[in-house]
Length: 112
Length: 113
Image (cartoon, rainbow over all chains, first blue to last red; front, side, top):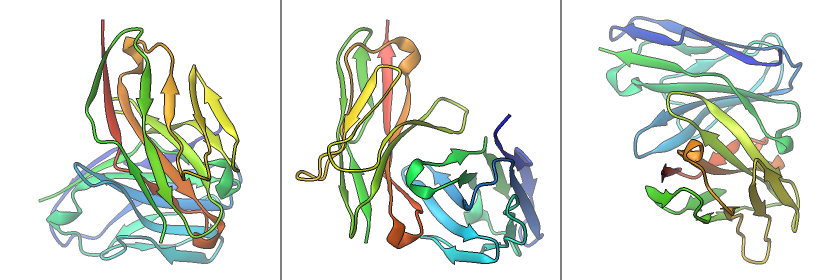
């Protein structure tokens, strides 16, 4: 089944403890992105990647890192999480960006 | 830069009513336009898309037409069902920005029996 898989689905962590949210797609897509969704603010892009080893900042990149060492994986790294990074995170991928993206099921992160 | 503006919700309709959710956009080039739907507790699903002016996207009874002259992509459905209750997001992507998706803030739709 074609899909984008994020893990974990839910995560509660403490301020400053490094964490990684994994994202993997099995569709051989070139494009991948990370978004966060917050009440009243909608969906905002964190980082995106157009191909292996090619990444770029989105609208809200501060406090996040990404890497794209393989086409299928695009992990989101929070080196020192803070409470304002409590949010619902979505990973998405696309064969060609103009055709639309497939989204993962989301990761609900709480930083205390 | 690119941006998407969609009507604020929540929108409450009775079953079988006609639905319109307005969406307008600003883009520097020639974007592709999308409607995504998010059901409660779930991720986003692509509802329909249009990649060039005058294209009409359609799916599950929903339609939207890419209007370049009015920079709009309004979502319509002739007869909504309770199962259509969800949050609807208008979005665009463009080659100049690496095909990253720019979303509107979403419109919550509640359909009552």
